[in-house]
Amino acid sequence: MLLKSLSYFSLLMAAASSIAIPALPEPVSNNSVTSTTVRGKTYVISSMGIGPGKQGSDIHNKVWMHTVGDFRWEQLPDVPSQQRLTGRIAASTVALNNNFFLFGGFTIKPDGSKQTAADSYRLDPVTRRYTRINDMPVAVDDAAALPFENRYIYLASGWSDYGNVNLMQLFDNFTQRWSQATPFPGKPVFGLAGGISGNTLLLCDGVSIEYLASKPRNFVSEPACWQGKIGSNPNEIAWQQVPHPTGKARFRMAATGTVLNGENVIVFVGGSQTPYHYSGLGFNGQKAEPSNEVWVYSVAKQQWLAAANSTAVMDLRNLLDINGELYTLGGMTSGQQTINKPIKHQIELLPN
Image (tube, rainbow, N blue to C red; front, top):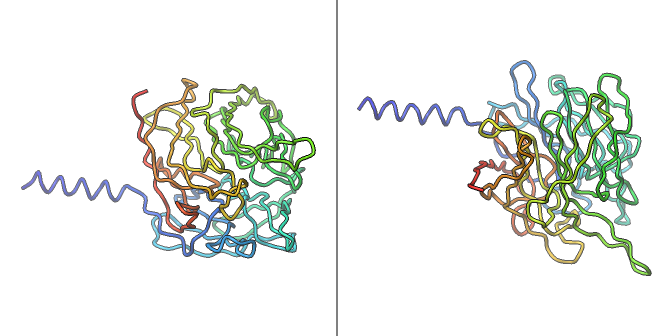
């Protein structure tokens, strides 16, 4: 009887130690999510994105914040905007020095064309107030955003109004200034994903632009992964290409650096092998479907580790790491269904 009681108590403790994130108040996709801990409280935000209608008019600037341990989400003031149209998707949100930083994204004009937003903001999760920071030197959306040493933020590649850029734009939160780091060495892409562990970053995939004679430009999946080692000067990055895990690119995955079984790794989940418009319809006219693949890169071994599949989801901006538990929040599931539920991705390594 005592053993049964202890077993039941152990199960209760294990359940209590797992983080429970409630469903968002409404479905949203292409939303930017991240978390930070301030004075013992962990805050999670979902900012901007597109609603279930998946039309230009469904793109918004809403922000929801959850305090881990509570049972609800709190709606914060909308993200400010210097654009006439205020909704944004494909924006970047990064947690740094107890604050959230929000960059870029794009709006849809009445004629259906995109406009990349240049204005950037810092959001204090305690006061719930925004502070405008210096604009990006080159406005980008669908870039990969990576924090470094609780001081710097890299914005890698991405789309800028008329095409992709190969820039590694670096924001210094101490000086509030932007500079340019060693450029991204691969083909400029949008919709790439990346993570950082220590001074090692890894960027994978996305969509490049193919220019053909006497034909409209074409959007092409780019199956390529690049590892960067940040030097003592954060503007200096030593790049090298690493083998691609599958040879098939994914668009709008979620990624983060984390620790798995005591090893520093960078994890990629979700995304789609079909590049697509914000509606989920592929540039090739086919409907995009989400991937359930998980890629795990060992920083020390500099190699990919085999991992079991997880829940299929796409149209992501970030992978949440909360006390070692990995979540996506929002996005699209099969049939381009916009969701409001968090998905916990239990990373299971397999024999290589």
